[in-house]
Every structure is written in structure tokens, then in C-alpha cells.
Image (cartoon, rainbow, N blue to C red; front, side, top):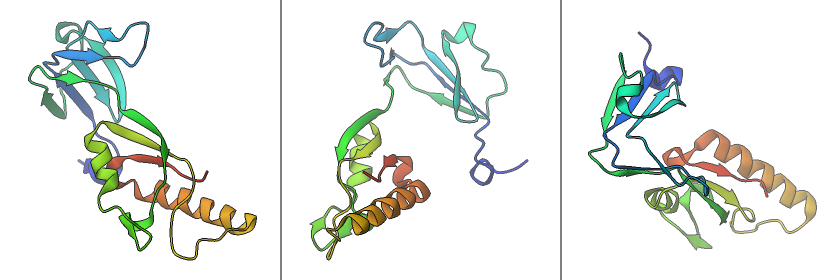
Length: 148
């Protein structure tokens, strides 16, 4: 059997015993559910455990009655390369933001670095570089939408 890390496939993951499940939908913020089933990274079922197919789970996570919510989006970040530059010291800033529930960040302006270009062509090149770098890197698993 192939390793999930090498194939990008997680198999069936079941999160059960959820105490409070928030939907992210303003019209229906709390779901009447205690179980989430994920197959290869996609949510395939949300509901009561008795109503969900939880058999043959590759990974079983007991939420122990805690709250589960969708990842939050921070729509205004300024990414830095390598977590630190002489202009902006931000060691571990992406991981720290992840601990607050943010799983997606949107760049409000490109990376700060010494000698950053100020002309249109240079700024566009920097935006493309940042977008490609964060597509390839995904620190902490966070999606950084760079390239503004």
C-alpha cells in the first residue's frame, strides 16, 4: 500500500464525537452533526455517526466533544520570504496564524525584502515569484494566495 504522504491520498478519515459543528453558513451556523467523513481530502459526509459510513477508516479522530469549524480566511496579509527578512522579522508568523484557525491567507501586497523593486515590471515579477513560491511551499499546510 502506498504511503499517503507520497501519493497525496489520505484514504478515509473520520472525525467523530464532535461537540459543536459550525458550518460557516450565516443562515445555518450550527449543524446537527457529530461526525465528518473525508475521503482523499474531500468531505464526503457530515451528519450523525449512526447515519454516516465510517467503516474502514484509514484514520479515526476523536474530537472529544470539542468544537469543529471551517478554516478562517485572512484577507489581508503581507507575506515574507522564509519567515524573516531584515526589514520584517516575523519568525513563524504563518504557523502562529494557523493556530488561530486561519487556513487561507490572501496577500494584500507583495513580500517585503531589501531592494524590493518599485517599477511595474519588477513588481509583477515579484508577485509571480511569490505566488509560485507559496504554491510550492504551503508552510504548515496553509494556503497563501500571493501574487497581488
